[in-house]
Image (cartoon, rainbow, N blue to C red):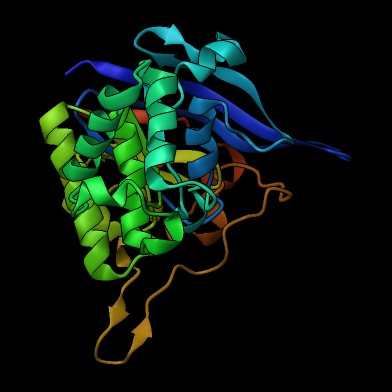
Length: 317
């Protein structure tokens, strides 16, 4: 499979009154056609910031210091805002974190779908209507024709999430960025949403970037995993390798964070992740790492391929 998306040496930070604070450091990853790539890590590790840069949807104070983002061989960072409008939604679609606030409460589901179809597909009238209804049917919304006339407040969180996925399907998006798509949903609905994403990936050969902290969702759905810590990619490998043969101490620690059913205590990672203001020499994980030695404190490791398609940033390797 060829890469449909490549992010290379991405550096992102925030322009604040007291200067530029870096949040993402030399992040690189690629996405193959028809692949689900999971990006995991603790809150604030740079998962969302890195992926939102693909769509140039960064916070107002954030900026990309350097790096390249190639979609089908073209560097998106050289695109104008007008050119990016032809990419967002049409080629690369976003499923945001909160389905409750992602739809306009003043317009029907149908109106919002039709607006997007007209904008990106150039279709109108019955032709656009039929595409919208078919998209709702594909995400398993019952009575799709009737639901086109409903308003968002009449839908549950899971149904709203299905509508957002339907918008991506209606525009024939090739990549879907799913930012914590199951966070606000109960377990049963989470499973249904992930099943829909797996089905459309298989049927349409769509590529999906799944941003999540839920390792159970990753294990069941991802093909490849990127592990991030404090703005750095620390490990990148196939999902089976990550779960069966993790190398980075942080990846191992993440997989060890479990509830002990005998004591009802949660096994956690010692310490706290650094804030964007912290100045840390060497490896950013060394203050919390049980394997830390002198070189970890003195020098930052580069990410390197230690086995076939298995990349790790750690002085142990």
